[in-house]
Length: 195
Image (tube, rainbow, N blue to C red; front, side):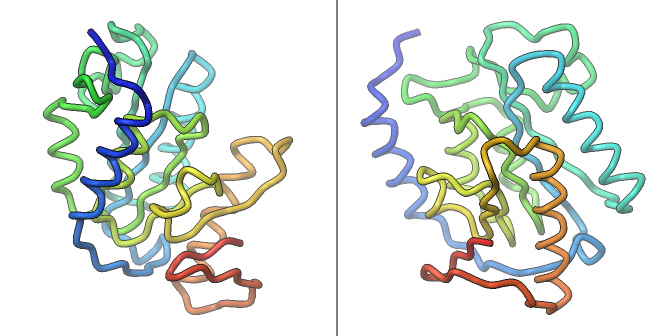
């Protein structure tokens, strides 16, 4: 499939995201009824990390309704993602803009998500697009220049820190903010926060 230049895809993302009407809301993990996760998987190790994170949220934090959405930059589903087959977008599911057109994306975006974790570390376009057009109550992720305008809470970490530490920091600050315990220093840019 022919893919249009990234510049055009970015223009499409900005145009579509400008039409999104959302009402940002802050809830702690305990208050959240539904949590979403955007995650790019490159290999078996990434998939294992996702499985661990989902298990942690469900068993340790008691998140009842969890909606992961996975992107794999391949045409066919790898065997190690068979468990999440119905929650995975593949390269063949993208249009010429790089926008995911799979039914699961429409379903994911229609769900009322209280907290959306953007674990799209590589900043792949299909997941950035979903993040941008999502109406999630609180969008949380790592601070990157490309995602600044789409995240409500950005965690700034050392590049050497591992993903688990970054996830723990995201959960920590979501809980602090959701419980009204704003002891951290805030850098405010519009309605966006970086900690």
